[in-house]
Image (cartoon, rainbow, N blue to C red; front, side, top):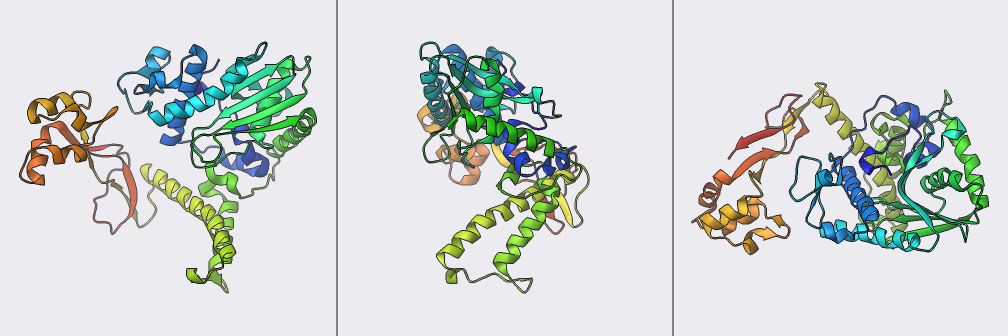
Length: 413
């Protein structure tokens, strides 16, 4: 079994297959662009680590409630901690435990059937096609029922932003092709692809059933689409698959698509002119809402790219890096409740929102004092005032510019 934090990322990965199926040119355009990741992706990785550990141990997810998952840990003892350790540490909240348990309940029901062979976090090989970059991917859960000759492929998604449809899902089908190699001489009658996505609304677990013919048809399509990414003139195409593409900020197809949407929805004779919203027909309003999401995504990716350039000393003309607004944080979160009790007589019930300590701003009104300034002064030794990073701002912004290589800004209160 492979830890979720140790997953490989093939150039033609199953998880990104919707993008390179529809936009073969995105593979070449993405070359050399670093994958910066995000706190949301790391949080999802933490949830996967919890799910994998529960599958391996048989424990339920709520057993780890209140603990912290350290993504830098190499062993269970180093991953599951009582106290946070570093910036890639995530609290197992009630929500995380509940979502992981929904996934566990589904896959365990399959795994516990007599004779079923199952695996979790397994590398599913696709290298036998001999196509550069099409190496395979790591499946969350794969099970084979030798009696019914049914293959189950389940994928756990912790994100809440984009609902994933299991029907004809290219990621699930890629995993199925990789998995079926292990049972090629034992027969297959039915395939089930499941997406467990509890935070995205609707049914938390969604399943699509297919037969062997569907898998064979997809195999031909997979080879064709994978080869298309290697063509010198592999085309670029914009769509909802652009959302997580590394090349989005520099993609001419996405830029042109965003501009065409803006012109189609908001322009008259090529000049931008915002329509009167109250005069829109419901169908037109719905169309604008759907199309505007892609424009916003493109603008967001441009902003992210500009910020990345500025942090490397290449600020766009007329812009500068500034520190984000500083916020107060506890110097010693673990020891603060005891100090608050000793000095100010505050009980654990007053300062805790289980299992976390309330923020300085939430505790401050509980501190004895005549006014806000007095209460803040009384807490001064317990907190630091820290900026969480940088943001790109116009030159006219009153905040002072910071060094391009600055990664942290802190001053004692």
